[in-house]
Image (cartoon, rainbow, N blue to C red):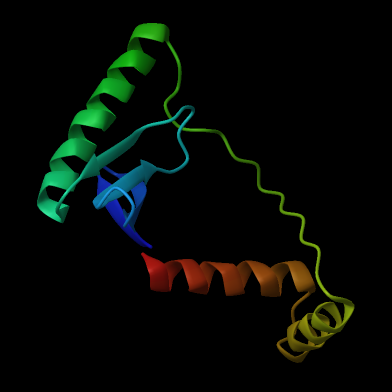
Length: 112
């Protein structure tokens, strides 16, 4: 899966071999907005249309298009992984929250 950004809105892209089409689905929206096409250029065009319809509907209904997110994250880890993460954080002079936030930030930057 790859990401495509259309007008600042990220969409995850995957190929569906059963229907022989690329499928895009916008992430972080207050509703569903997906789109399909045979090639990536057409997929971008379909994505722009799908996003426009979605944004127009949000404006008409007075709804914010993006989901709101909190700053809290809860993870369930294997105890050995948790212990190793605590040690890695301590080795860098950080608590686990700081260390995990930095690790996630670095991972996200490599994907963008």
